[in-house]
Amino acid sequence: MLTSPVLVLNLNHEPINVCQVRRAVVLLGKGKAELLENGRGEISTPSAKIAVPSVIRLVNLVRRPFVQRKLSKKEIFMRDRHTCQYCGLQTKELTLDHVKPRRQYGDHTWENVVSACIPCNRVKAGRTPTEAGMALLRRPKAPYPNPYYVLYNRTILDEWRKFIPWVDVG
Ligand SMILES: [Zn+2]
Image (cartoon, rainbow, N blue to C red; front, side, top):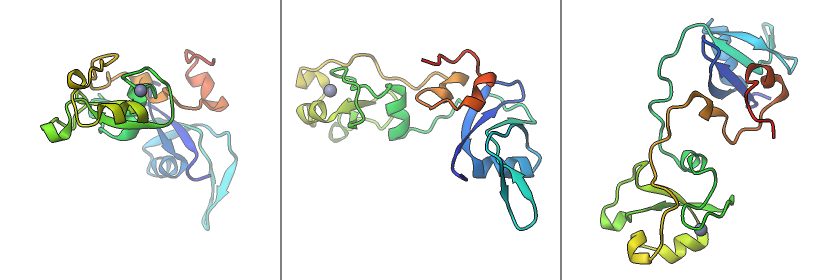
C-alpha cells in the first residue's frame, strides 16, 4: 500500500512525476501538495486516519522538473522503449551496452549507452558497432524533457484517467 504509485500533477495540472504513497503522504502532510483523488481508502496511524492518495497536485509550480534525468538502467530501457537498439527486439531481457566500449574509454552518458538484448551484446562484445558490423537503430540521446514522458511504460490507474485524458488507453 505504501509503495503504490501516485500520480503527481504540477500546479498547472501537468503530470510531473509518479511517486509512492509514502512520499505523497509526506508532501500532503507538509502542505506541499493537495489531494485530488483518493481511490484507495484510508490508512490509520496512531494519531489520525490518512486518506491514501492516488492523485496529488503540488501547491507550487515546479519549473523544468525534467531537465536532469539521472542515467540509470531503468531510464535507458524506458527511453529505448524496452527495445534492443541493434536488432529491434522488444524484450524484458535487456542489458546496457556502451556504444563505444568502456575499454576504449567510451563515456557513461545518454549519448553512449543503449539497450541491447543479450545475444546482440554478446556478439558486439568489447567492440564499436563499426568494428562489430552492427548498426544502431537510432542515435542515442538524452530523453527530451517532455512532461508526459513520466507516463511512458506505466500502468495507468483508473483514478488517474480523468487527469490525463489524452493518454492512449490501448
Ligand atoms: Zn538485439
